[in-house]
Image (cartoon, rainbow over all chains, first blue to last red; front, side, top):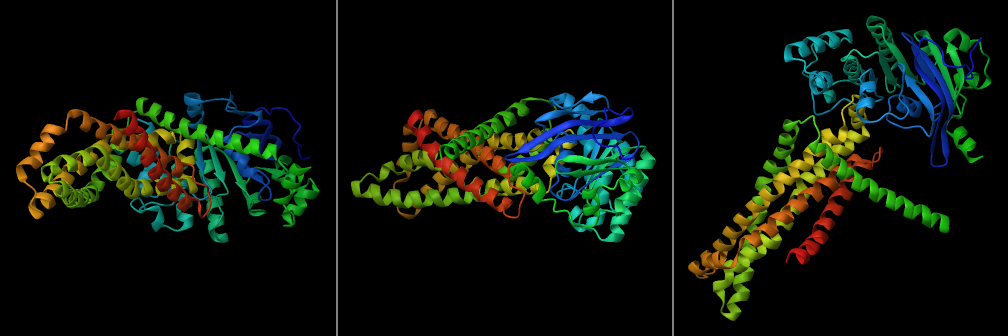
Length: 266
Length: 253
């Protein structure tokens, strides 16, 4: 059975979101979101564009603050954290942005080494070792001296993934990592996320509209609709749920952008 | 109607508040650890050192035209001897700080707004936050510090080269008397005049960095966002330089 969003905090969930609400102007983008991301699994949030997926992710990585509701990450209520404490939490996660967000003034090496250089007291040889290790894991060995502008979109994503992994985070967040890539590259990135997730024992939270491709390598699927989680469960559970909106979304017929607007106007 | 007006006013006041808080944050993080001197040095190079030639060139021609106009005007009253004093006072108290600031705005301020704007557009600023690095401390504070240090220095350069240019044209070309040129400066310009000029330069340094960083940092994430931020940064900086100049002059005179 697909678990709907009413269940209480699941044990073993490294991220727990309860009744999260956020409004932008007249638009209620998050309208009581509940979500649990179990430790060591890949949870993929899917839904039509404009349904609030990216906004939700930006709450999880503390870029945005909710109007109400709570977010617990690794046992810490982060909803109202500030300053130092907030940064302590952030050190637990790595984030892969939609367009990579590599610093275009720096080489791949400097980009990947950046968090270590800025935030740790590691020596140069140690940093070089770590960077080499992570670049090898994402298949970018030998590309250290390239600038992001000299690489293809897929390679930029991989470099960005390397940067997200460099501090050995517990949680990896991915915002539509395959946007703008062809099907082959999309598959490669998915494989890579799966591979690194296993290799480093991570919990991954991904936002994607890449259905049904994401079903193959996700452990759990959360389907977002009109600012709520309409479905949330394992891939098999979600597929068997017979949710009308989910079926429409899979068939490519959900008008996601209009619906929250219409809902907000009501 | 009233609701809209109220919303508009609240919007403006909130924007002004955000603008002020932005500077307060930048100044606060300037004093807070961790200190990253190499970031400030890099900015000093791009704002200060790389503006050297341009500011010098503009200073030279400003001084030269002052020499020309000054001689032409003063000779009508037979007081060519005052040329040095006029050129030096106008440059040191007024034109030096203002023109140097305008030139740095055009050269470095616009580039800064565009750079921060495109960093915002491509989520690089968010990436810093998520990596637990404060983006204001990393990007804005070093630039404000570089502005505070480099504006007075560039102004000094502008003044010195400008006076020299005024001398070259006024004395060398037009034939104003050489002795009174420098004697007049020595007798009539005190530390107070120099202090006013440097004080202005300091204020302009903060204002230009503040405006250009703020506009770039808050650029909208769309195609025209960066170009708009750059334009607004240059226009607002230039306007504020001239408006502040008037008020500073009226207070400090």
